[in-house]
Amino acid sequence: MSRRSYSKHIPDFRLVTHFGESGNSMIHSMSLWTKAGLLAIVVCLATVLIDPILISILYITCLAFYLAAKLPFKVLLGWYTLPAMFVFTLAIMFIFTEPGDEVIGVDLFGSHIQVTDNGIVLMYKLLIRALAVVTFSLALFMSSRYSHIAYLARRMMPRTLATVFLLSYRFLFVTSDEVTDVIDAIHSRNGGLIRGVSRQTRLFAGIFGLAFIHAFERAERIAKAMESRGFTGDMPVMEHAPRPSVAGVSVVTVGVVVLAISVYIRYFDSSMIWW
Amino acid sequence: MSRLVSVAHIHLEDGAFSPEWVIIWSVVAGAMVALALLVLRKGKVTPRKLAIAAMCTSVGFAAFQVSIPIFGGIHLNLTPLIGILAGPALGSLSVLIINIFSASIGHGGWGMVGANTIVNMTEVLVAYYFYRLVRSKLDFNRFFSGLGAAIFALSVSALVIIGIVAVSGLQDSEQTKEEVLGNMLLIAAANIVAGVIEGVITGYVVSFISKIRPDLLSDAEGNGRQDPDTASEDIDAASD
Image (cartoon, rainbow over all chains, first blue to last red; front, side):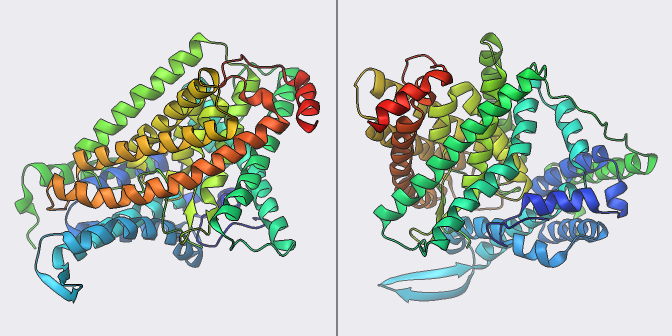
């Protein structure tokens, strides 16, 4: 469980890892290969589907997957803030300028500003797609053990990239705590974060400067320790992720078929959507 | 606190680009990463370098999550700083991994990892070479070199963002490329303003690091990597 996190709106890797290591749902027992295959299919479907109803069905399916893993819904709602904010910051520009019928409009400073029906639909689709993928992605990481993720990364990435990836994942918890420690230290000395831009900038330069210095010094110590233990640049993976079961392969196959149908509908025959 | 403005990052989620453009940007990013790996393979990648790249990645990702309460809340990428400290090849791997971590928690979509990596690799490359140029050829001080490198890199990457989004368009949107460009210019302007703040922070951090661990900057300054064991002399000199 996390010592603390930056915010309840940002996913906490310690909490994610805690659920991944300690959960016992049927999703936890599913092979990581199967879940990774399904994530790829969900990402492809979110990209290919353009009908709002089908996108909504995709989201509901992803949410059902998350809940089947016995993961906390309230936590997920808090973590939705991040992708929702990103969609909103982009869509806010398009919701007013998208061609379509006016839903609501006001005259402001001599010009007419309007929100169109197409603008609202565009924002809805962007939001639901984002939430569908985030929900599935979090469900995957919150239902998978670190050793399995490490195995998958080692198998799928070039050696150097995999080594940096796996080392980064291990360092992540330490550096996150370190940055939070410095921020806590500022708070504890009654140094609130609301200051002038100049002072604020110097304050955070100190935080990140210290974080980098500490990180480099720790990296050098770790490198020496690893070299003295015979490290040659290859991260050993001690445990293999289990192969997908027959049921897992079947689920992925169904997903691939659904994706193929979605591609066909999008590019060749949109009349298959009758509503 | 959630953030309102963000720096130099395509905060588009999955489904914003059409499948064709997701594939195109992913292939381009894949080629850039392959090039970085090739460069690393030609040189000697020591465990120290790998550990430093990993630490840069984890600090970069941690910094991603800290919202600074300026202009309603911004977050930093620190990618120009990663470029200066880790170099172009390892820095490129770092930003790719930061984007993978970010996608896993909804900070940009999985399909956007390719486009985001192109943007962030641009920042790493431009910042590294800009810093190297102004330090070794023009002999600017470290604060202004870091400041200039970050602002220039983030401004270039803002243009890359505009280019990528304007070329790709938003799927489902009926707006023309010109209209999308108009909308993106406003977002890019906000990014460049926030980029100035990141530039100042980068300048301060580079100055700070130069006083404590100048050996960490020697590669970007064209001096060759200094042995960390001799860094104590620099620390003594800096403290004097």
